[in-house]
Image 1: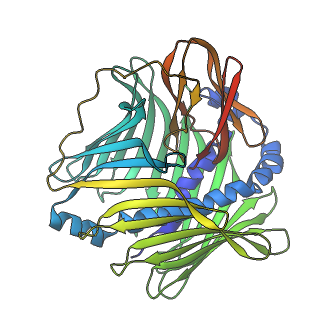
Image 2: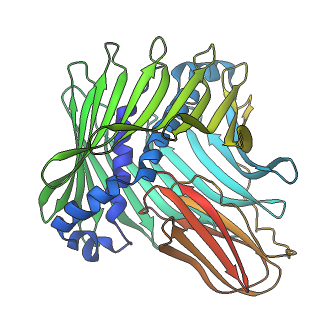
Length: 480
């Protein structure tokens, strides 16, 4: 089971580059106007020293490995085709300690075309015991079964509203050369972001050029240059950012491999204005073959690498990850943090994932994801509800956001027994206000709002409901 983890750096870098975008009109009044010396000498080192972000990077790598192992393994997909079994829907449930059971919070339905390409993905959430439409992804494919476009829509209570459109272009070798993201502005799609990819003669990625739309033209934003060894392994990915037609170093990932071409060491460096400096490092160990046994995250304390976090993996006899345990280093020993436990059916398809947290020296139930399969291909998702079901609640309530963790959007539900002056704000872990979602008089009933931000960094955020003289606070996790 071979996974190409290094190319995930391109995804992570897209997030890193977007760190400095503040709002939709960023290109003229924000990022482009920032002072380069201040950007390099102050913002970059401080950002890269964010321990919470380092932990997020390890989780991102681990979750990526889980996804590729349990859902993208070619052997698993082959079994799925042979068994004529399709993923019909997924249910997300959170453990309720009071009722001592799992409560359904969200579900996702899938539809496919005759070539088994996923064409529709509709997400619903619960509201006063009823399922309410929330978000939708509609995909279109070219004649080579490559995704050509993906449209994101949000439910407004009675119909689907367009939000984003992502379009893809490929070369004659079926390699993706262009990805363009557009925003819907009432009557038309408006350019937002694009990535232009070029390749070496061997077919490996040479460079990813990121650009933003400033309202008039595409402006260089950042680029990622890749280097390879003789075996075609990605050995370095260097990120640079643009200012006034000049390119400046930003960050760099280097990769080392064993004799079987398995990734063994990933080192992240940042540019301090003069030299590349160590930031963090992930070391991989393996069982026989290419199954990852352990991923350990180290951070650089200016003189040596110190333990931070690690993920331990276990596999089924069919070479699928069955258990992933996340641990943190407390200064003297490794301590459990949380774990994922996977179950599979006789066809080798993932049927259930349990997420448990370590609390009081025992594993505590937290989240469950259940996959339901169909022997026939689902060609459409359920008919959307004509309108949301709303009843009058008995008290003021603020619910856990869904999905959580999220990227880039999540839904926040709250209930009001009577009309109230309502304020909902988002804070980062330092207490800094990063957004206000609601600020005004709201009627009684069930309310669902969407928090969506492409430009915040990964990490823990606080959302707070203030209604009348009540204040309710909850946490949510953004992972990019």
